Length: 320
Ligand code: UTP
Image 1 (tube, rainbow, N blue to C red):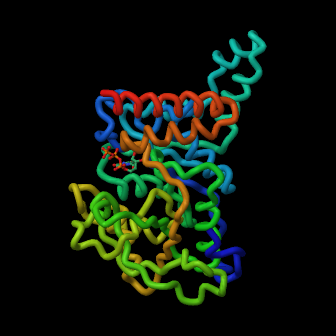
Image 2: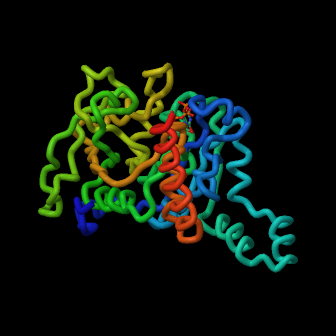
């Protein structure tokens, strides 16, 4: 990623982004029955719940104020980022410093806040629930079940674009034409005045957006993925956004209104790194396998087992 390499000075009036909003109030129906009583954001990815990776990503990008938008059945999400003195006490008494450190690290990631979304009326509505906490500042939104590969710097990149151009910034990924109906889809054009930093075309201006279009209606193959840096102007738009696709208040529809107005530019950073949708069962399985393989503590043995397992499957298929 090298769209913008320095913060630049375009928006001198633009405050620095310090707040991250993590919507985690969805029903997780694609993962039922596992998510009947357990939030999908709490499904483990190796040894951490998915949402912990998301909070770690926000924290690594310097966003030290995190608002979780939660709902019914989401107490576990709130508890995960809270102190558990009883558990810490037991681990300390046992001298299990490694696990004690792992438990404490979670609470030290950021200043955590919660707000409840009374009913899952859609992602746009979940973002609107953050209004009083965010106030009149730009802010980041990271979807609680969407993981960006460790070491990727997508969010930092998006924050730099916001600092330089103002307005809102969304993350885009090129998908196959038969996948566009699963995402918000963006019409894009080259960003004007990328100040020479945009060598590989990863920064674009978004001119239109459609939520989950039919294949023939998709404006491009650029799908919106779960990272946003938003101008607070989005709140006024969301206040009047009516339910759209699936009867839900869609963030895409509000961003479309901004993108098609002249006052609030919406830029897109085209991401070509690793991204996992842990709310989707097949993607969730791939996430665990890939991240487990990379872990220094588990990876070597796991990779060995995995290759033997795959080979034995091939042998079975060949002999069966
Ligand atoms: P998804 O569409 O992936 O979540 O929303 P979902 O509705 O839970 O998914 P399925 O299709 O039923 O499995 C993306 C993100 O927005 C949050 C979700 O928790 C997820 O992190 N969300 C969605 C809310 O916080 N509130 C909503 O009303 C809808």
